[in-house]
Length: 487
Ligand SMILES: Nc1ncnc2c1ncn2[C@@H]1O[C@H](COP(=O)(O)OP(=O)(O)OP(=O)(O)O)[C@@H](O)[C@H]1O
Ligand SMILES: [Mg+2]
Image (cartoon, rainbow, N blue to C red; front, side, top):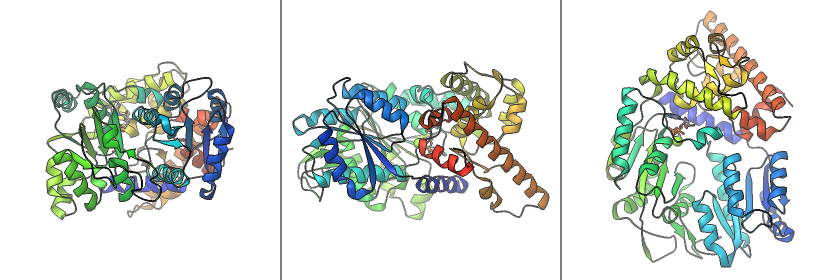
C-alpha cells in the first residue's frame, strides 16, 4: 500500500514538472470573440491559437500540442456537439470548455453532460473566464490521468474469468439494479473506474449521464463549487448561476473518484448530500434534491483512516452501503493471460499491426510477475511490446527482454522511470545486485528511447499521433522526448 501511494505521488510530481507552456485552442467562427478570450486570459501566461471552423480545428490539433480546447457550439461546418465527441474519441485527455451565447446556456449544460469539462457564456465576463481557465488548468496539473488507449476507452468489457472476478461480476449485476451507494475499493490500476462505469451501464439509469468527479484533484473551494454549483455572485468570478456535478448527473450516476482524498470539511458536506439527498448551490438558499446514484472509489485504506480519526465514520458507513473490492492482479494470476491476450489484440488493432498474438511461453513469463501497478501496468507493458515486437506475435524473448522484472522499477502507470531514479532506490543492495539493477534500468531506458523513435517515425513526426500510439499523454511524451534527447 505504501509503495502504491509513493508511486502515485511520484506520478503526480512528474505530471506537474512536465507541464510545458499551456497552449489553448479557441474554436470560434467569429475571430473577434476568440481574440476577446485571448485578451482576457493574457495574465495567465497561456498561448492562444484560434480556429474558425471544425476543419481548421482538426489541422491545428494535428499540428500542435494543446492543454485545453475552448469550443463554440455553433460552428459553420460541423455541429459543436459532434466535434466535442470527436475530440473525446481522438484526444480524450484534452479538456474541452464549450461556449454559447447566454441565451443558449442550456446547450452548455447539455455539452457538459456529454463530456465537456465546463461551459462559458457570452458576453464573456473576465472573472468567470479566469475562474474556469484556472480551475481547468489546475486540475490538469493535479490529475495524472492514466493513459488510455482509444480501444480500451471504447470498451467497457471487464476481462477476467478467475473465480474472484466472476464473483465480482455477479455482485455487480445484482447491485446495478438498486440505488444504494456503492464503494469500490482496490489498489491503483485494478479497474475501479471500469467497474463504476459498468454499474452505471447495467443500471436502469444507463440512459442518464455518467458524471465523474476527481475528488482528490481540487482544493476544497473548487471541489465544493464543482459538486454543488453556485449562484450568481457567490464569489468573485461567479457572474452567473452554474449547475454543479450533482445537478448535472441528475437521472444518472455520479462517480466520486478518490473519495479517500477529501478533507474533513468536505467530508461533512458530502455526508449531507449522501444522507439527505439535499444540497444548495454555493451562495444559494434554494434546497435542491439530488436524483443521483452515487458510486465512489478509493485506493486508500478507509478502515485505517477511520481508526486513525482522519475519516468520518458516519460518511464511511454511508458510502459503503454496498462495498465492492477489486482484487489486485497478483491475487488472480489466471486473469493475466486472458488480459494480456486481450490487450495484445486491441493494441495491435489500434496501432495498425493487426490482432497481435502472444506465445504461450511469453504468457508464462507474464504470469510470474507480481504486477504492482496491476492491470494498468500490464496493459501499458503489452502495448509497448506490441509496438516493439518485430513479428505478428509477442515471443518469450520479447517478454523476457522487456519484462519489468525488478519490482518498483517501472512506474505503475506510465512506464519506465529514468535510470537515475532507480539508482537512488532505497535498500542495501549488494554491489552485484546493484549492477544488475543498473544494467536492467539502462536496458529499459534504451528500449524506451527506441519505442519513442519508432512511434515518432510511424506517426510521421506528429507528436500527438505518436503519444496515442504509445498510449501516453502528450505531456508525458514531451517530457520523455526531452529526457532522451529525441527530437
Ligand atoms: N478487468 C479488466 N478488463 C479489461 N481492462 C481492464 C480491466 N481492469 C482494468 N482495465 C484497464 O486498466 C486500466 C486501469 O483501470 P482503471 O482506470 O479502471 O483503474 P483504477 O482502479 O481506477 O485505477 P486508479 O486507482 O489508479 O485510478 C484501464 O485502461 C482499464 O480499461
Ligand atoms: Mg481510477
